[in-house]
Image (spheres, helix red, strand yellow):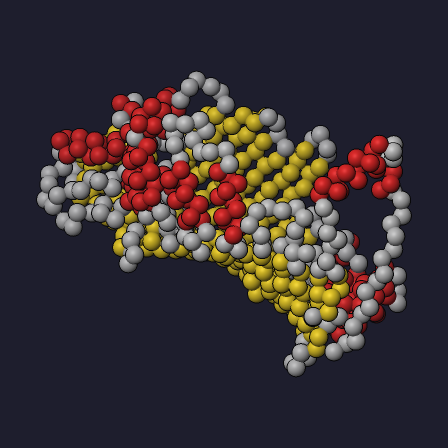
Length: 532
């Protein structure tokens, strides 16, 4: 799919005329237009060929010719059939694009551990779509295959993977605030992968299997600057010589600014149904496994998000060999973790970098530029987010959320970030009961009981029966739980005095490492507040 999008994107300025004949003159014009993005050498050396074929132009990518253009070496070898696309001009100025995906490819790569051999086979792979030259994107596209297999082997591991029928659909259109909006959805059936670690030197042989009857990939992009990105590609092709880049850096800066913010928003996710993980201990299962990612483009108040969700978790009976028996009932059945960042001012950083950049100087940016731009980034108070997350089993539920802030305008090892974290638990008494019952026969569990009861002493009981801890950490090192200070500020140390004290110790011949082994004076434990 990447080869399809990359190659066809080069048609961005090929504007076909309605009713034009498909002939050698038209093929020459298509070749000239594509050369703006891929360079003329790709055609001179036979890597890409354009010729009239019936009512369309046939674009052929010859991978063997591509290999011949590379310096002679034995590091990489591969055998992939030529890739052929048919592109047909439409009445509305767009192109109809279709192709049959290469059926088989083999690769050989030399690694420090030896040779890695990989073979991929695609059954009945097809692609078709409509490419809009004005927007430089596909307004519609579909792809399918009957199945796929992949095998890879090196001296210490092997991978066998397969997938059944797969379908992909996508669509794009003009965005309201510039660029294009694009969506893509792909469904794959009967996914299976076996990874075997087989290291003769250590004697380790561990097979792992991953299986799912289906998985779905979704992606959306808002305001993608596809045309501006292609213009940057064209600039790179036209200015491959370093001297030309320096001479035309004003144009480069204009193009870089035009490409911002690259996209307004991008989101993507993988969703596996009935996912199974096979290990030497047995098979772990999940009714659903989801991984997702999202990011704003280059903006003054950007945000990014990561998410992981596993539902219906099951563990094999043999897991008891690795875990205490009593702990099995405490294992989660559902996990949802969400993290991210906010107040990310990448726009100011990008624009100041582009404005300051001078390729005629060495270095192109002033030596202190990185420190200055970093200080400005911190001054906007970026945050690390712990977005609402949850871990639960049949008896209990733990929910938490919070954020980490950086209340200083430059990296400072003497300061800690501010942190707020709220944790609520439903069914905490059931957790304690399980630990207390285990402590009757398992001495190790008694420590967990003590810790659990101590933690409850700091908790606040909510009207619905849940208990809650609100933790607040400050940059001065102090920590409070539900408004009660459990740790005061760190001692203020003058860096100059601290260095002088260190010098005095060295002069007296005292070994700091030996001092480190001396028992530290026991600090007075904070008094626990009365349970609210």
